[in-house]
Length: 220
Image (cartoon, rainbow, N blue to C red):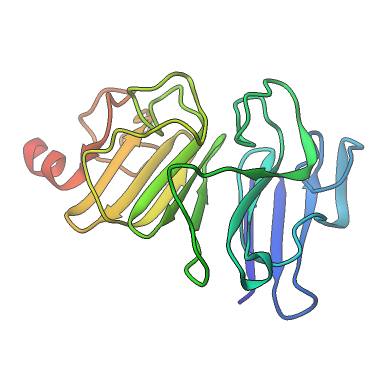
């Protein structure tokens, strides 16, 4: 299936019916359009190389991530663009890259044909597969795990108060997941609810994963 994702000044699409390619356009200051900078590529569509069989794409602020089915044998995740907050899954600091970097999801073994679902926020990404979840990138607001540092790598183990994750949604510095027991959210609560995803009444920086149902009941 074809997909299109956007964030701020960048757009990426995966076309699975016409050559299995991912194309991006917009700002390219950090290589987030999948090509070497110049700073901008507005109106110029760039084909992201190094991912032969893209299945889906997610886009954050100055970076993107792609699921590659690896010719049907397995599945992997690769990210490209800004890596100031470990968005590419490596502790590279300010190092950026227009060539996709393969993310080693050691905590989330994947097998084909089941593919992970990706959700990218402002500077972090979470992958959901077979009920498990792994996140990497910025964590200043605890949007990945409040027990970890300001940045999270794929090799870090998340301490989650729930199991059997079905789906993940991200927005800015916030993350919400749908599980068998309901919806849980974590991260920046400055907009009256994890960037609009939680409910009013919590601290601006949520202390950790919160059961949205319980919070709603307690605030009524």
